[in-house]
Each structure stands twice: as C-alpha cells, then as structure tokens.
Image 1 (cartoon, rainbow, N blue to C red):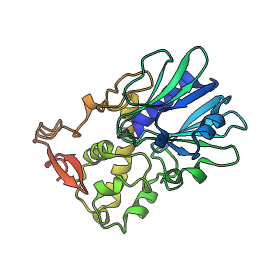
Image 2: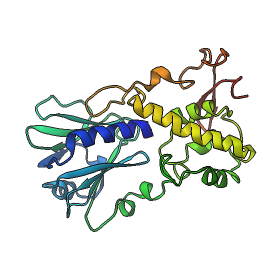
Image 3: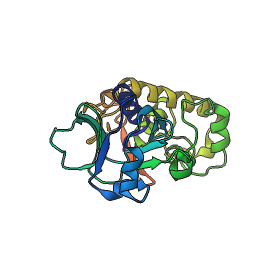
Length: 278
C-alpha cells in the first residue's frame, strides 16, 4: 500500500500538472470505486465545471480543493491505486476505474487492480472530515507541529503491544505503513517487538526523529517502488534502493554486517537487524 511518501509524491505531481485545470466531465467504469455520493451521476455532476485549486494530503488521503461552490474531491489509493495524468486517446489500462476529463485532451485516470481504492465528491456545504470517516480519525501527520516527543510518549505509555504494531495505527500517527515503520525502528535502534510501555523517553525521542528522517528521505527519492506504485507520470520511486532493512531479510546489515531478519507481528512482516536493534 502506498504510504505517506508515495502519497506526498503523487500530491506534488498533481499540483504541478492539474492546478487551475477545469474538470469537463468524466466516466466511472467501476461503480463501487465511488464512496460518496451514492449516485454516480451526482458524483460526476458535482465535479463537472470545477477547477482544481490545490491538492492536499491528510495521512494517506488525497484531497483536491475545488473552485468556490464545488467542494472537494477525495481519493484513497489503498493497496494498488494509481492516479495517472494522460492523454484521453491513450489506450485504457486493464484496471481503469474512473476517468476525469480536462481540456486539451488530458485526463486524470484512476487505475486500481485490487479495487480497494475509493473516491469521494464532498459538496461545498460539507467538510472532508464529515464525509470521509477515515480522515476524521487520523492522528497527527509526522510533519505537523502536534507530532512532538511529548505527544508520542503520552500516546504510547499505556499501550501494551509492540511498537511496530502501534506505528501502523493511523489514529496514532497518520501516514506510516509497514515499510517506514521498519526503517524508522532500525534508525532509532529499537527492536520491533519492544512493548510500547517499555520505551524510554530517550528511545521515543530517537524514534520521532527517525520517523521524520526516513519519511523525508523517501519523499526526496520519490517514494518506494512497489509492484503497483507509480507517480502521476508513470515513473517509479527510488527509495527501495537505499532502504536499510525493508525487504532485505537474509542480506547483511549496512551498519554491522549481521544478517537481517524477518518476523511476523500482527500478520505483517517486520524486517530488522538482530544486532543493531537488540
């Protein structure tokens, strides 16, 4: 699933390509992709004639602020969703779900192999939080001022579960998934199985800094290349080539040379160094 850096990469690309572009129409090829409103005709009618003022990111959600009176367009890529800026006459990808048409034969195409991705049109008299329940529940973004050592310490002190599992909770921190949780724990020298209640203030401080560092590094690299992740121009991300531990089990640690391990925590793979994170 695309995580914060991948969604941020898509957001930046969309702002470069679609700002002030007017939506002239669209086509929904898979009805269940539209989470709101319940009518496909209402979804398309609500967007038609609007201009995209600016794209925002909330955790892993993309929110397009539309011209006054038109509300918002919300997108969640989920596991395999892609937003691609293409010419309308380009052949449709097999898993194309929604098409939004713009001037000069351009379109924003939502492609989603696993069909878990969603789109919302939020009318001008509503807020994204009132329509998209997941947005309302999000914890602070790691780049927001609210994400402090004190906040993290307070939220973790009574959680009797592994720190790796806690980091995947979007109500605790918005945007982190499996890849960057593994990377941040490695950089902060914390074993993924460590209980939240056992973490010291110093460890929590290191973890906060590591989260911000690894996310920033990945954003600068254009995200991690998943089997399905592409930016809006169809280009892969580059972070995977510099990952410390993620998807490197069985290979030597870049710091100490110890063979990296992988375990399952709450059904998710966790990659770590037995020596550096002992």
